[in-house]
Amino acid sequence: MRAVVQRVLHADVTVDKTMTGEIEQGLMVLLGVGEGDTEKDAEYMAEKVCGLRIFEDENEKMNLSVQDVGGDILAVSQFTLYGDVRKGKRPSFSTAAEPQEANRLYRYFIRCCQEKGVHVEEGIFQADMLVKIHNDGPVTILLDSGKTF
Picture (spheres, one colour):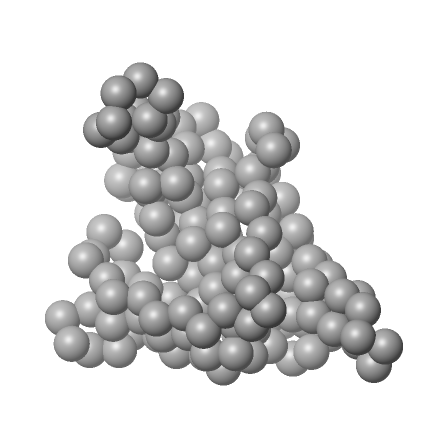
């Protein structure tokens, strides 16, 4: 499972001119599910995302998590995080999970975050979405449950 996590002041997602999710201070999480990922990967990602200490404390040090600052998460499924362009210029998505399994694990990731007390807004799985991100910092963190980076 892979994620691009951005610290945001505001983020929203729109599908067919209807806003489906919106947050103020918090984290924008673009989440990709790979073939072979399990609930254990989703639990790891939820723990990591909710615990990331990328918000500043009173000493202007990144020392606080989204939970500490009372922020929210906007989660958007993004299979393109598994785009492989090592050969040629057209991405191959052969290592992305099949849609049914990807959606199940995406939903499970959201539940895991909610169980940690974080409010989660979301996009619509497999929809063509317009995502607006006001990255704060900018701060962007890449995560991989396989710890490949």
